[in-house]
Image 1 (cartoon, rainbow, N blue to C red):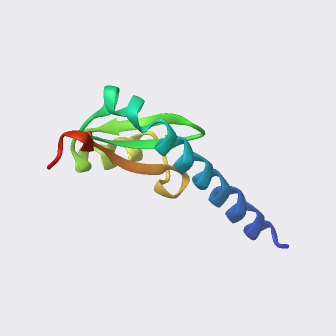
Image 2: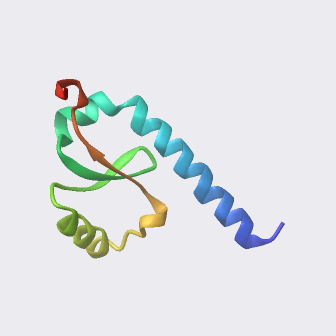
Image 3: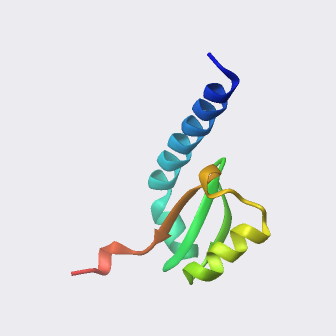
Length: 81
């Protein structure tokens, strides 16, 4: 197996793990980040913003690659019709 495929596998496995963590902790995230975009890496919210343009700018300022994080728009779906 090449070094690139190992790195890609690690990145993919981290993405899956963080995606599971996001969905498991979604109700807690609603309390703090409702109606915000969040970036999650290693079970930590590493960036968040209400506006997508500001969110993208924050990721860039923090030197965070979108491929290294799980990105989600958090919203409380319980009140939707």
